[in-house]
Amino acid sequence: MDAFLKIAGAVVVVVSLAIALQATVPSFGWLGIVLALQSAAPTIGAGIALAAFGSLLAQLKKIRLATERQADLFQSIVERRSQPAAE
Image (cartoon, rainbow, N blue to C red; front, side):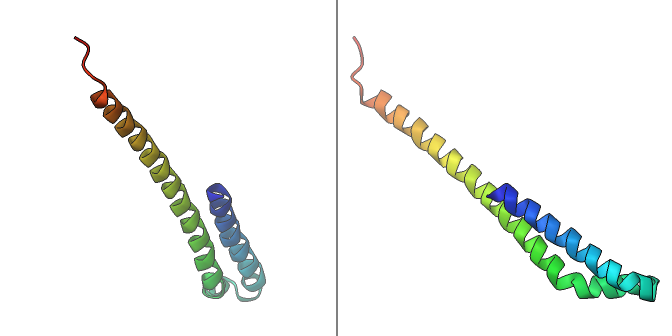
């Protein structure tokens, strides 16, 4: 899901920018670039938010895996300490 959201965010940014540029640049030239960026800014922000959410999910997945590994290591330490010492 995290990779999908990152890719979807990038696609939203690129497509919105392309559509805005195609609509304004032929009519207004260099001023069209400024107008395109201004009109596409909310959609670009949404795409960036999607990609950031995907990145957040990836980091949470890594944290969960590290926590599970820590729990396993702690359990093995507890089990080792609870066994009577062989004499």
